[in-house]
Image (cartoon, rainbow, N blue to C red; front, top):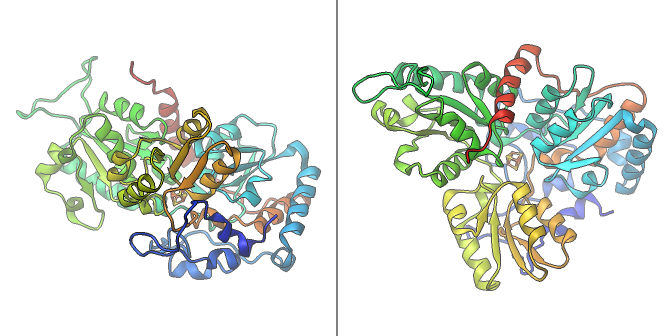
Length: 443
Ligand code: SF4
């Protein structure tokens, strides 16, 4: 077990890792050195790491101070506390670990996966009284929606939000929606104003809302109420086809990159994908641009995946001729276009697992996952495209001290940090999630 303070120095998996990116950016190690200071730095931003320049919405959940003994414990002591508490709880508790979590957390996870795989695991284990979700807030919300009413979903540190999810709040999306309905009307129309209909003669909607799984439960509920749907990075194309069968356009939030990369691969011209900036009238577009749009992209992004660049790909190929570049679709379009392939965390894992031994992979996704892949596949050379190693700073807030605390509280019969989605919100969000589950890929 490594200490928290030294952990970041071990994150540099690139064989030739340097200390600065082509843009001269740097990644502070302060988050790893001092995990207890939140929520105080929240006023300035998400904290050291990839998301440091983004604003944290007012009223974001914070973590009160936990008992000193967890703060003073060594990594070995925390590891022992977690193991003992898990053993005592047995099958009453399951621990979920997202791919982007640090190894000290993943070591204790009963299930490891992406946000949707973990939510499905939550659904598949109704016998567990408590689901301890080592991920970020929107993931715990989804697990709560999909699990039974009797189960408690626990986020070890509620300050573990997601900067991308926070870029689309409910009020801004409701305002955008009102503007779009005002401008476009409720139904799809031809140039002469005729209402367009589907194969059953039903009017097509003028716009269908699609939210990425990385969004609040309130936005999933918004989609449920307004004929919309949820997507993941694995099924975004299937979901967009579902939406185009029911509407003339799509409003895609919060991640512009996943929306753009997916729609572009489906043949939607870039000129028909305007960006919606919630701070500008009509999102910064003319009514004409919105009428011509096929996919209206919310101005959101993942701070971790936005760091990847074409220059990094060129550098990787120059230094490792023949390497395979695989990136996540939350990366900017130019990066996805320049890569050998792009896909979800599951796609990346499968691409590595399926390769003949002796391959070299340059991966564009969160560093904890890249390092784990490298450890699991010693037959390959695997490194992160970004030479400056920044973990997802909000995922990183799930420190083993918080995990030990919530588990020991459970042993004492106390549920702390429960994430509970209001029942009416959960009901509407379930509608959008169920539509996603029912959407079948087109042949
Ligand atoms: S990696 Fe990006 S999208 Fe995922 S939790 Fe972190 S900030 Fe959010």
